[in-house]
Image 1 (spheres, one colour):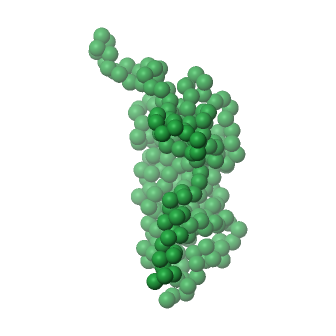
Image 2 (tube, helix red, strand yellow):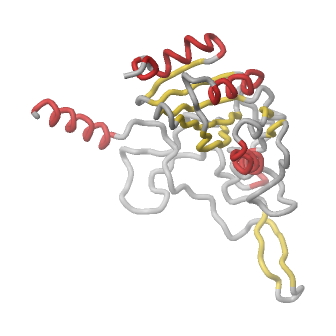
Image 3 (tube, one colour):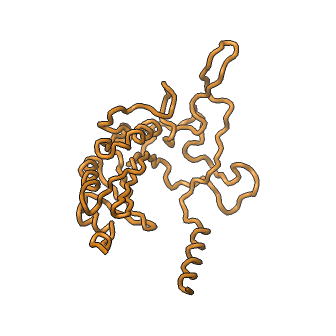
Length: 243
């Protein structure tokens, strides 16, 4: 077993980067949080240095932490029927455009999250970079370090409005030309701004305010440990001890 394998990834990150990284380990998954100004230097070191060799960037995504931790879903005293049977109140996103939140501000609201893979050491690492300015969320592009991230950064820009400084071709990739807003932001209504239909009289596609869609919740927005998974883990531990 090599020295790299004997020492945990979190320990090696702390020894190499010190206070530059804020490291946490949850469910054996390491996350390193860092400032945008340090991203390029740290990313280059993680890719190139023998102790890390994170040569693959598996995924990059944007995150909007507005409303993070808020629960709009009751998990105890609800009926067994109905699409939104457990919904209590209206959390972020479930509103029409006229009633959208105004002057929404949450410190450290937007972040860019990268998932790295070291094939050489068979290890994974999550990097999280918060944008310093919520009104103009900006982080450096890592296209020069991991070229395959090009379309991921465009997707994050399109859906969250995060600007990747230095990207060679930063433009929308999923929404239509002329789309207004960024649909994965939590202050963007779930039903959207406009809907599209073909008008037989005008013989063209028209855009008009949404009238045919009602906001509803299909997935619980709660942060919790899954009891079934915890039970399965406990049973697996019991089986291991018996064997």
